[in-house]
Image 1 (cartoon, rainbow, N blue to C red):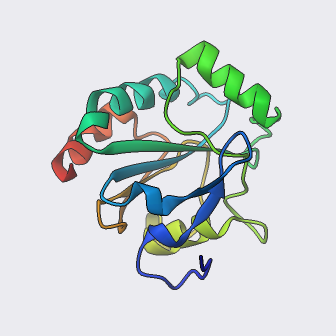
Image 2 (tube, rainbow, N blue to C red):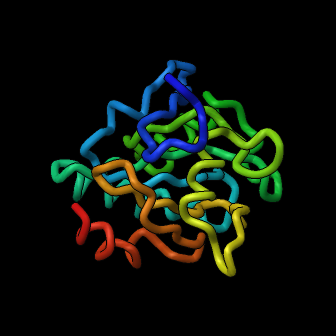
Length: 165
């Protein structure tokens, strides 16, 4: 599958899950996605509980939360993929899909995050992800429709998610 950023939807991308398996985002076609860069040692880490609650509540209606651990902000995700997976499961009962640790900014940013940032720029048109727990909402057609800041809790954005399910 092509990894070109110019595509019209998110389904073009392949990512590695937390166990190293190749995952085509094509499998999430016709689903509403909430894509989040996570970190285990961040002040926003308790949002994992709210993200899991959204996933459990709306999963049957087509919501999938995708978590992408990232260590680019204050070194708040220093663990291995196994440590991250265990932490999320044990402390927050996370059952939504987690992926291998990624970079979301800079020269080594994944193609997926390059695409997300281009499609939904931040405040004043900024393309950088500012911190952990930045969220991107993707509709069932694979179009990125909104970026939420780390301060936008899962509870605060629930209505907007529900509106597009």
